[in-house]
Length: 115
Image (tube, rainbow, N blue to C red; front, side, top):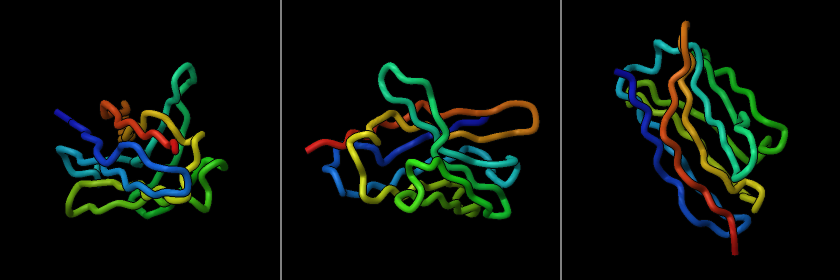
């Protein structure tokens, strides 16, 4: 029973910051990678950032230099630090755990960037 629970979303002004958390019910070390995806209304879900157990990361071009993904294996938690937020970052952000056979998804947390 794998559960991923996101938190930290909310309303923030442009240029502001938020930190999202994804708490897993099992050790995240078992997964090939952890990641964050987002989906804006009427848009398809897109990759934001991923991180492997070796701490290799990759980011969407649109968030490079602004977002940082990290993990705390002891807490089974993945974070997404979002700085200099822009209105186009508004979306539901989903936590993803990539296993050998299937992916697991959280229910999402809404981030709204608006003045």
